[in-house]
Amino acid sequence: MQKSRLYYSMMNSSISTIVFFLKLVMQFVVRTYFIRVLGVTYLGINGLFSNVLSLLSLAELGVGTSIVYSMYKPIANNDQNEIQALMILYKKAYHYIGMAVAVIGLALVPFLHFFSSDLSSKEGFIWYYLLFLSNSVLSYFFTYKRSLLIANQRSYLVNINDFIFLFISNIFQIFLLVHYKNFTLYLIIQLIFTLLGNFSISYKVDKDYHFLKKSEPKKLGKEKIKEIKKNVVGNMSSKIGGVIVMGTDSILISSFVGLAAVGYYSNYTMIINNVQNLCKQVTNSITASIGNYIVTANKKQALELFKRHLFVNYTMIYFATLILISVLNSFIMWWIGKEYILPSLTVTLIIINLVIQMFRNTNFVFIDSFGLYWVQRWKSIIEAIINLIVSLILLSVFKLGINGVLIGTIASSLGYVMWVEAYYIFKYGLQEKLIIYIIQVIKYVIFLGVSVSIVFFAQAFFNFNGLIGIIFKTILACTIGLVLYVIVFYRSQEFIYIKNLLLRIIKR
Image (cartoon, rainbow, N blue to C red; front, side):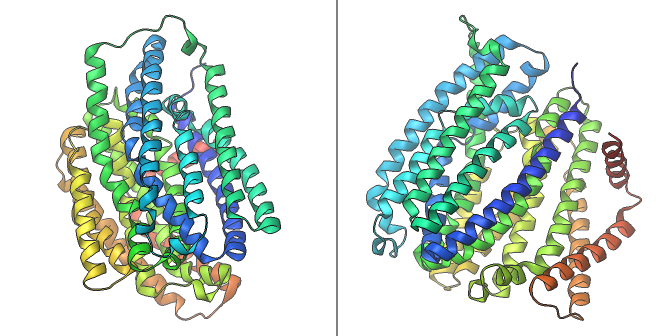
């Protein structure tokens, strides 16, 4: 029996959310042992090399999303021949990408010390980097098979698989940290279980999709290949800026401030990224369903879907912001100690940046669903240029440190890219006026600002510390926030739709 889009959306959203929270717990446990055993400098190395490898992933940008997009139609039509032909094409592409990342990554080895003067003082930093590189490169030889499950609205299987292998690897990593205090062993375990997880997902795809093994696969037509290449190039250029903007943060901080600063900052980014990833689990898990729906929907239906998605996304932004502004520094103090706290201004900038990036989640989903890769091919290059210029000026001239990097990111995202993305969606996808989006976002931001002010004022009357204080502040923020939220939105069409959808899910 063919399962509905609602079924797949529910499965993907619910399972990915559960897995996310389980991963989050493990991440905090491993990070705690890591900091206590190896210290903040190794934490900085971990953050720095992760950022360097994210920059190398530029070679892959465009391919993964284009795979998923190009499969929506053949999957909807159950065209097994075309699906097989696409998978063969992407297998070749990812093998070339893996080799390219390996070559570029190895070419960077002589220049690693330029990323931070502190690296030279750490023996074996080149070996650490090579283990990071190997972990990244080997993944490319399996990633293309995941795309078939994602395009077929079965991303929950990928999430479950990844969590099982991550959980086992984390257990081994904690054991080795406690007993051997060795960063190399920590990275080797990560590499081994990345490989095992990829083998597992590849086996699952081969088992479920027997037609991939057909002896005489269909060949894609020239027009189809031309369309795919166009999408890949457009998507790659459109995402370059995002990777440069986010991927260079740790590199800039390590170069201008030091590795220890990267370590302190990485604790906050771990929390912030997990909040953002939680919201992405909910929004991105339904991208395939939206792409499947948009193939047949008219423009009016698509606009309603956009508004509902934006409202769900904003709801998560709203409550996440209220909680983070209330307890982020208190949580860091309780978790790893007062010495790891960043100044209030820096924390505020981190949260503002999070809000902007989370607003963009809806843009990302609909750009992918409409396949608007080519029309926005220059967007992120301009974004990257703005970000780097502003960040470098604030770092080198005004000596603003971490704040300078954050302001550079905010300037490029809020000042340019967020609105350009929406413009492309409304002009080429929804074919509506952009003012609809602008008015909606302004309303949401004003309400968020008022709610934050009320919560902040209310909490000033209470003075609880430690875990009790964190729990109390979280409950107070959510309670006040929920009351204000219901008062303002309970009559809106989007709120009524979400309420009815939740009731349907509960009944199921």
